[in-house]
Image (cartoon, rainbow, N blue to C red; front, side):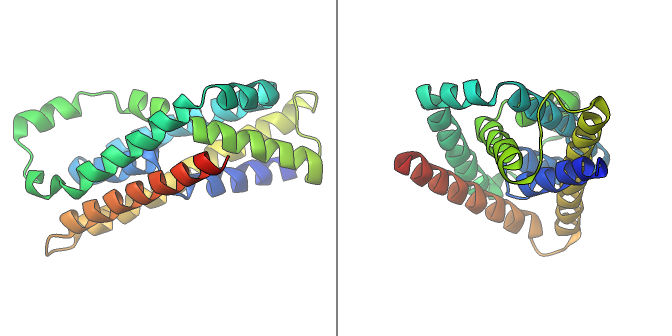
Length: 210
């Protein structure tokens, strides 16, 4: 029975990480421009950020839900951010030849901090975990801070493994795209840009309906 918490954390994290988001984009972009190893630094840190989000949602799901309802400007900021980043990727074709100096500066940036901040400072993901935890408590089994410590550890371990494994697959996909010939990088950036603009569009619709 207790292993169900590990499976729940794993599947819930994978489901939440599958849609193309900011962390996924960072992993793909880093794989293409730098290396798979540096992209995995982002993935490892994003997994930790995801665990913190789930723990945060587990402790104060009701308060967080009310906070985002009262501060809707946060959701608007992220919708616009996705939109502008998507437009940038659509226009990035002419900037594929990156100067060496700029690349060296990028290599010095903390991939760990990037991965953690992109995963943790993400209101839609917090809302996702609030909903996931609420549905689990309502329809599956008890999931709160009162359950055994071992069950909580397995749940958060599942979240970490699910997050980093999904991001690893995104990194592999980005690496394969980068190795193809015939301007595949430009095509990949167009796909990413289109996906981000589509994501911002649907998030905007959800925001207006809500």
